[in-house]
Length: 330
Image 1 (tube, helix red, strand yellow):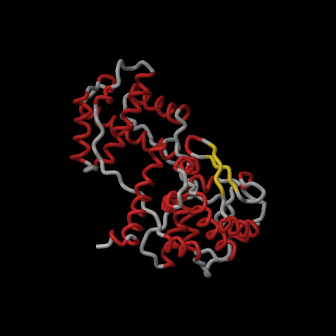
Image 2: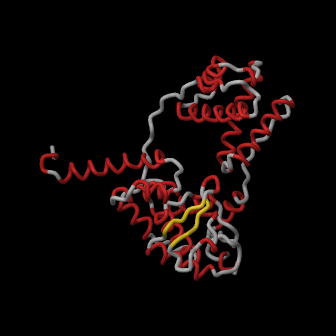
Image 3: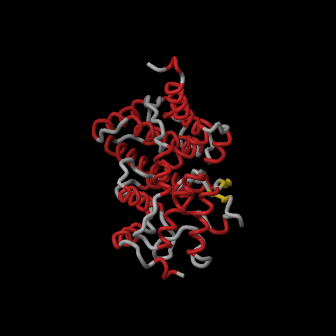
């Protein structure tokens, strides 16, 4: 079975995936941290991983932020369990001056600290959460970037004649499924053969914090997926999408495939998994889909995460109005 993945793949693609496969994100506790600080760090890691059930990338971001904060407290001789609002403001002033971090990054780091001190309060290490007295910096909310209809069609219809048949069909199935389902990239690479229903019209997905949901596969995506599975065969790893060596495809492998597709197409706009997700949501809302249904399909725990797409949808409606209504034209 694996031999079909060896022919026709670009040499640099092979080297890239070999280097990137099986990468693990982890934040190490520096040796110069006092034992009490290291103990807090490890306890917090366990809390985020086991109780909060955070993903690998979220866990890495939160622990990296905490490490920076611990370094600052050591440098300034600040007691972590006895900080006040002025200490927190001094920390963020230091970040702004030494690392030139923007408001969005500062806001995320403040969120990390709030979670850490909420944990300390729960564990009765402190009497109150000092971070609650610090307000988030005001940030301009960025609207998601999506593909327009022509761009979407060009990406989906492109056929790479250089690649082997199975890899070409795999890549076609990847872009079709991404657009048809709005999956996150880690959900796509984690999807297993057993998660598909027999007709290939629905897929069980393990989302953030291991929450399960079902997504639906449209006709075009189903045909592309069937073509790929006919070449792939039923043997090998449980995951649906495999790399050229017959192993599980990684998230970085997906991004490389899409970047390569953009390059050979000569497309100016970047092709990323999340742009397909944005396009999926925006196209549904433009077609009149209920926002609660879109929230469920995307796997958003909060409706506010889905509502950002309404702004994009409204912009589209404004464009239609300006172009179509006689009194709207200048």
